[in-house]
Amino acid sequence: MRVKDILNIVNGKLICGNAEAELKNFSKDSRIVKKGDTYIALKGEKFDGNDFYIDAINNGASVCIISKLAENANNMEIKDVTIILVDDTLKALQDIAEYKRSLYNIPVIAITGSVGKTSTKDMVASVVSKKYKTLKTQGNYNNEIGLPLTILSLTDEEALVVEMGMNHFGEIRKLTNIAKPTIAVITNIGTAHIGNLGSRENILKAKLEILESLQTKSVVINNDNDLLHDWALKNKDKYEIYTYGIENDSDFMAKNIQLYEDKSEFTIENENVTVPVGGSHFVLNSLCGIAIGNLLEIPMKKIIEGIADLELSKKRMEINYSKTGAILINDTYNANYDSMTAAINYLKSIKDKRKIAVLGDMLELGEFSKKLHEDVGKEVTNDIDILITVGNEAKFIAKNSNAKEIFEFDTNEDAINMLKKIISKNNAILFKASNGMHFNEIVDSLKDC
Image 1 (cartoon, helix red, strand yellow):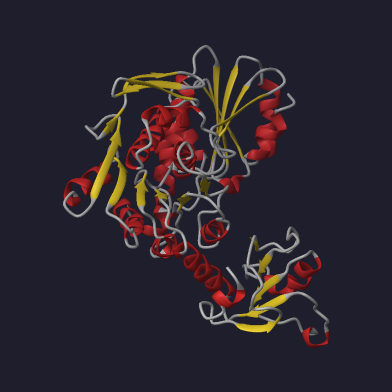
Image 2 (cartoon, helix red, strand yellow):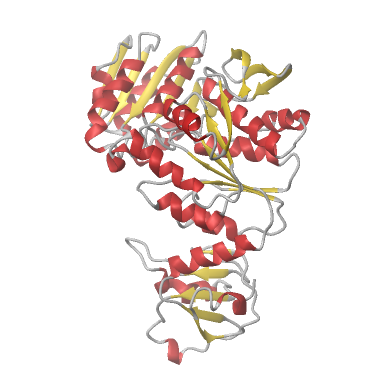
């Protein structure tokens, strides 16, 4: 893309520079801009990127998209730099991404759901990469800023796998309008963000916004989820719905499931599949990968290779070991009732270890917070040797747990001090809380123990 291609799209004014300048390697952080990059000056709650575009130029940016000129701009000599002035840089970012998406005729798989979006994205991308050069959402780039930046990083890729997150109605509508997916995936409808949306039915409604700009009728759903199962039955004539599951009869079903500490095995259509991560929820993720692979006509042998080659994003069921040999299960990126339950069940499945669950607050649950924390507590049965909770809401987990030993703390530091006293080689320790609880610092503190 060149500057002249997008000036009308963003309703921009060329302040200086070259209309033939190329827009590449978009960055929203002036500190990490590289030579030749395009810097876009986004506004946040606590900062204004317009205050830093001169820094971006000094660091090598060749194009800057801004909504406010520096006070001394008229007195500055800016050589070999193109500056575009727009009314709203976020809208400009999204409009440019939508335009760039229109230049590509490739499979675009969009994934949403209450839980498991990132791990499913990783699984699907691993499978798709066996046939196509594939770009996937990096880290937590699943929102109104991250998704456009992902699309703008497209170069010569032949397929795109994107994750779509949301907190409120209308957010996925905006994302799907930018990404124009060719296949939509909904992993489940749980309780994440129920404090904002009020009910699981409203969460389903918000997630279904992903279908509004779907370029085909291809929809892949987790058929074991009650609301998605019912939706599929009611809408089978409107969409080409492909189902996967373990419990309900589905198009893609796992049989003869064997769960281990560090992997799972199952059969499908007389083929043996090995998932290199423990937990039944990763069996579901792999079934989703198989469904997508079939839709894209990837041979089953290659699909199975893609599953075996899975590399998860950080802090999603990430297995580390302390110096003493304790297993540290880092699932600290985010948490809601469904993901908490899945992680706890995985911990329970580990054999011949002292099982320790370190659980913290689940955020953004509003008036449902107390009950959902209590419901998590009921899942922490006497199969768990030690429960350690951190945070005000997590106390409701402790009060409803039947773990053999229970400890409640207010701070991460208190939990760290406790864990350092009891950690040993025969421990399997799960860490799970919303990202805002900063549980990753607890995991890091124990690696040298």
